[in-house]
Image (cartoon, rainbow, N blue to C red; front, side, top):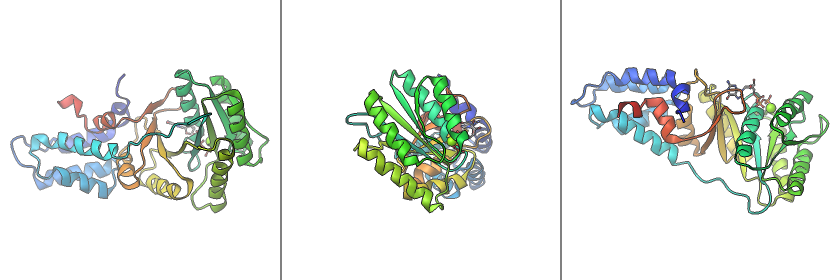
Length: 298
Ligand SMILES: Nc1nc2c(ncn2[C@@H]2O[C@H](COP(=O)(O)OP(=O)(O)OP(=O)(O)O)[C@@H](O)[C@H]2O)c(=O)[nH]1
Ligand SMILES: [Mg+2]
């Protein structure tokens, strides 16, 4: 399969390639080139602290080795947080999907559903975003299109009650996985954050070892701001992994490195478009190749 990160990160890769072009083989790396490289990394939305650390790791390298050394360090940073996903011991795997408004939660659930269906698994979806009728309808459209069962209640219903129903239905039907869609929220909305805690608590009454994953969906184009969101959600929602969405062409994409380094959370998936097939499992080596063009030059 073609490396999707090649396309997604082409802008940042071009910029970084421009900086790397200043390196003269056979010579030590000069300060001006390192400065250019640092600026290119920051321009790719790798936060300043992370960029400085990366530059430090290649300061002593020979010019011709810089790209490879940088790539190795980036992969190391990303793989340090790869971590395994908890598997369901008995009964369905419960996956709670959270994030701020419009980050791509509902669409990501459609994509994840498709991924699991393609593996031959039985999927059920819970419409626990009960704030807007349109939110339920959006999910219903996806569920119909994908041919999976949706558990929903009238708008305004208690999201935790929907999640509870869905877990019970998933147990009754022998589903392999249940995805719980939630309304967008900010970490500052205390009542909404405690609602997530309630959802978690209530699902445990049905599936005691769940939720097995709490996926935070982050818009990959919101840059360092997205990082702060991730940090705040981590505190209050028990997030276990990330889905980075909208990495489709004009994204700078470097935020993944900062997330890994600062937050210590694995990026599990990336979204690369609006269709249900536009999802890929995150792969550190391919991502770094997309950012640095490593493989093309070796
Ligand atoms: N280009 C692109 N668009 C995406 C991607 N993921 C989601 N979108 C679009 O982003 C918009 C918001 O997506 P939703 O899935 O509705 O986001 P949400 O987080 O559920 O939004 P709320 O429920 O309102 O908080 C929609 O127009 C999606 O089609 C992606 O990976 N790439
Ligand atoms: Mg939604």
